[in-house]
Image 1 (tube, rainbow, N blue to C red):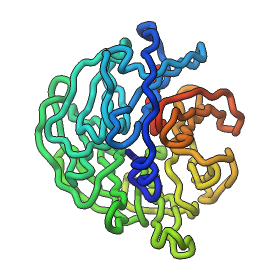
Image 2 (cartoon, helix red, strand yellow; image 1 turned 180 degrees about the vertical axis):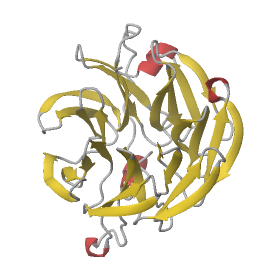
Image 3 (cartoon, helix red, strand yellow; image 1 turned 90 degrees about the horizontal axis):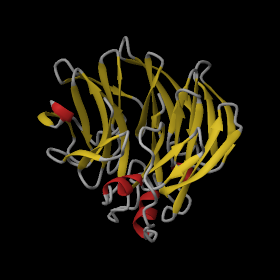
Image 4 (cartoon, one colour; image 1 turned 120 degrees about the vertical axis):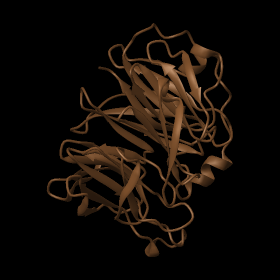
Length: 346
């Protein structure tokens, strides 16, 4: 639901039904390295899935959580993170975090307490921090499998994605019912909000950019029928040493996601992936990869772009794999609404 809650796509997610569930396929051989595609599924349908892609053999396994465990993952799979051999899957509308063994995809544990529409996770100082979109808070957990609840950190608005830079946690607050332009900064040594930075309309996505941070502000639809009164997307750079906003780059439109590799950002724009030169603060190629895409990430070892195409938002989506020069290497089928990626390739 990371981006289904934004703008007109929320209507699509509600109106379309779900596909007929597939029969489970054979289990994945244990211990293989690959890419998890986190398929959100449709709101209130409980049809979130994990697709597992093995680049070395070009094999694709669908709905691997169900195959391994005999039950569905839940309602709106948001993100997945790997920590100490466990995959932490944020299942937003089910208000839970599902832990799996990434060697077998078997269920390890489920965290359900003190969560209110969870969105994002970071790990620091032997603690796990989870944003609660509807709770206007960040839950702090510790202990075995980070299942011991410690406290809630109150923040304003709707906290969403987080990153860590210079031992500070940066949290974006997108807009859902009122204008937002803020990024909260939390000191994990005290679990206190130490600063609130102002950027631009609807800061939705945040990524590490070297030792600094980049924030994608997707802008606002005012009158959806009149694009002339919109505010359009910008990328902002935050210096993590001084904790100050230093630069902005006009992007235009209302992009869905972005990824960073070296000095370039790859933004899923309204009609193409836009390549942005962060060093020189300008758009390098506005039509880098043509098409309307839902999600994007850079695979860190081979430096490949993984791009999610949600298609109709009610049938199986597709993932396209590109080089950073814009050459397509392959594509494969995923589940309903491929919304994020988790790389287990080290």
